[in-house]
Amino acid sequence: MRKLNNILVSILLLVTASLVVASNVNEDPLEREVLNIAEKLRCTVCQNQPVAESNSGLAKDMRNVIKEKLQQGKNEKEIMQYFVDRYGDYVLLAPPKSGNGVPLWILPPLLLLLAVIGAILVMKKRGEEKIITPPTPLSEADQERIRHARSAMDESGENE
Amino acid sequence: MMRQVWWVIIPALIILFGLLGYGLTTNPKHIPSPLIGKAFPALQGKDLNGNNVTLGVVQGKPMIVNVWASWCAACQSEHNVFLRGARRYGDSISLVAINYKDELVNAKRWLNRLGDPYQWSFHDLSGRAGIELGVYGVPETFFINKHGIIVAKISAPLTDKMFERGVTLMSAAE
Image (cartoon, rainbow over all chains, first blue to last red; front, side, top):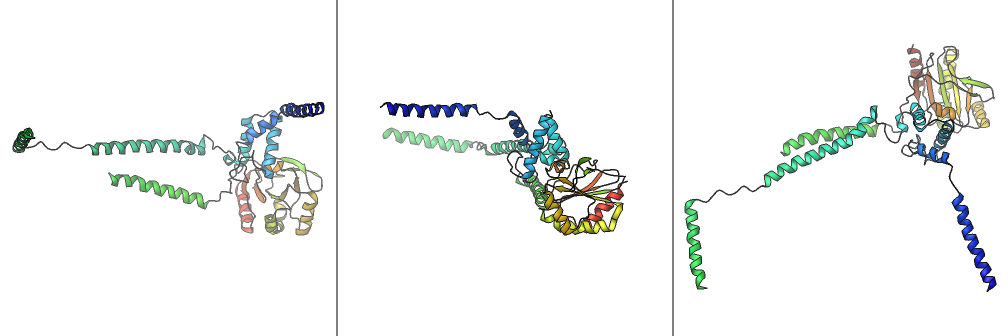
């Protein structure tokens, strides 16, 4: 029994020790910063993958450049500009909000707005069309016939 | 009512297909270089023999910079263009190279085998000089006029025709 206890305790110790060790692992904040910037840059050889995720040689080199620049005290904006100056706006995964990139940002909401306005106009028009115009009022002769028929029905109804 | 709607939809469709057609026919791998019209940056490093070199325009001479690597098959196909170009223009143009992410041994062997048209090759083992120049693949070729301004950048294997065009552009921009 004692032996079993010892084994259990050592297992417990091992498990908790591994937890303590695991919680002590912390990431390099610089590495995180590098990835934050690399996520916004397009890997120029893989078309639609961010530099942060690509395994291509160029992406690795670009991550190294980002790291170096951060160590030199450059901020994110300066580093992004460094790449834009060399690879053009293409290197930005999100197109710039100025110059050539403006239509890309403005057009979708504008088209949506136009579509909504169009839809409202069309629906309004259709709504108006659907209203049933009241039938022309019956002539005096027709109303007389109805009255006549009703009174005839009432008389026969009394007998039922 | 329906007639009016078609007047909007048809032009919109024509514009849409026009844009789609344009998008499909252009090469997505071609990235226009923002460096054209800018000064070629001076880069310091070593050549394949370990000598210190500065990549930059010397003595007001137009310069062609070819980015190559021994592991790049397309570089072999354009190599003859540079051999012919070097013979043709001799000293009037400085033809230099950046040896991109390559082992020295392989690079030297490659030049021995195919012939060396370059005054020297800048050894860019890390690819840093490449990034400095916005290089995203090899081969790439820069044409720089005598004032040190980049007038053209080709991101493809060069042909004799492109070489001549580059030379014209370099001398045209005074």
